[in-house]
Amino acid sequence: MQMKFPPWNTIQLTRRGRLALLVAGAVVAGTAVVVPLLTLGGKPKAEAPPATLVIPEGWRAGQVYDAIDRALKLPAGSTRKSVGKAGLKLPGDAKGNPEGFLFPATYPLPKGTTPESLLRFMVDTADKKFGGVPVAAGAQHNAMSLHQIVTVASIVQAEAATKEDMGKVARVVFNRLQRGMPLQMDSTINYALNRTTLRTTEDDTRIASPYNSYQRMGLPPTPIDNPGEEAMRAATNPTPGDWLYFVTIKPGDTRFTTDYATHLRNVAEFNALRESAAASQSPEQSPGQSPERSPGQSPAQPPASSQPAVR
Image (tube, rainbow, N blue to C red; front, side):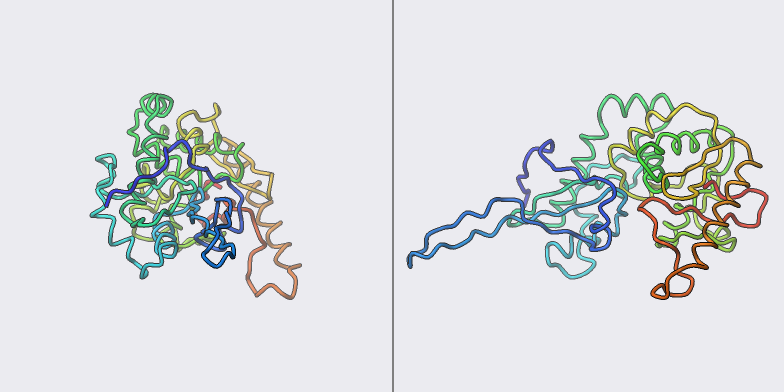
């Protein structure tokens, strides 16, 4: 049954940095005012508020599917199985994969909501958000399709530590593509291995996967998460610059450079700080546990190869 949802421009968008959302998974919340109703016995009865589902920026499709299953109280895997029959309006080069087009927002869950109707709502919202003139102009300027621009934005969403860094990260992506350099983004390897980690090993960079951006040239075949508007804005209008490398030394200190030797010094400083933090970790931390970092920050120790990680 086709659900009737509120207009797309009434959807409440999420913001980066909601750690509770990332830890808890699907967030189902009431948004309406509780109105007491009189029963026959004269006692007021509270009306249950309608539920909503919050999808944060940067969630992968698999996380969205699991969240829908939980929110609608369905057996695990139900939403994933419904993708093929949802009739999603995706770009042709997406080949039926909605990764990147499940727009991050807060979605209402009226009675009768199905996985198919909710997925359609998310994709339709992305279509309205991404189908505007600025996005189309940005894609044309960079000689890319919408699907490719969303793929760039998904990398930016995963890699950038702050909103201010997004435009610079996008510029690094484009500079490397234009120079025929591999992207060498740890986020693409994490996607291939279905994990999130602060460290990428040399063995990781050798995995046989189309998402291994250390060994394969160009963009990965699909987006690696579902980016928000800020990441899309960065991908369509990247900050001017000639940077080729970046590394987040610590929260609030991401260093971009075009010089390989400078990048190596920055990476060495990051590694020294990380080793110092590991040596002074509290007894409550388990051995080998990395110090806590903000979402989006996952600089990795570069592998022992001629080209370090672009972090």
